[in-house]
Image (cartoon, rainbow, N blue to C red; front, side):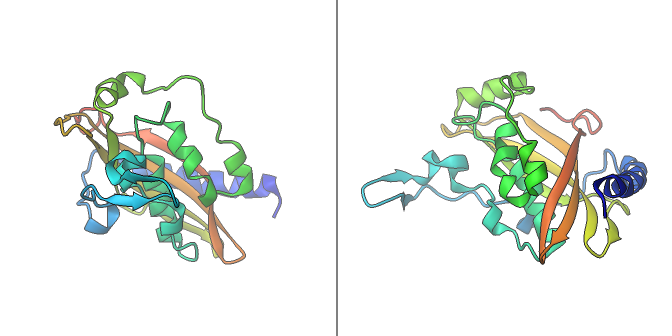
Length: 213
């Protein structure tokens, strides 16, 4: 299939998904325990023969999902891990939200991964001010969007839509009220038995549900 015909196929399917997804806007789906990485108690981990660090000092307090967590033969697993990684931020090392997207590149096709370039400025800079003061990291949850948002376009092409919520955890244990909710649409293709993310887009739902970012 040519790139032009493939793009047309996804655009057609995406229009259907967008209409369905709008009906689910503002609905809070219950989060399953499997959809959030547990917050581990501080431990000591080895990073080499002569280097060690407390778990709370490593990326995301050692709680973030990683590409290795995804079962690439399963479209649902690949989509869920990608959605979690896209919303896993650590203010001690990340300058922008896109830093999380860059970490998710191993789950993407080469073409889509090449498009992920971190900007100079953070679009969510204001929302990160308080978390950054307390060296906080995000803890995301991801559940399938309500309704018939998911589409199996063909045996090797699929669209998955997930509702993602997150809260901030401060390393100094200061309670943080900021949180957020988005809907992420992921376009996936299966190549050589592995599902790749070939496109994604997000839509903010925080205002729609009256939440606080």
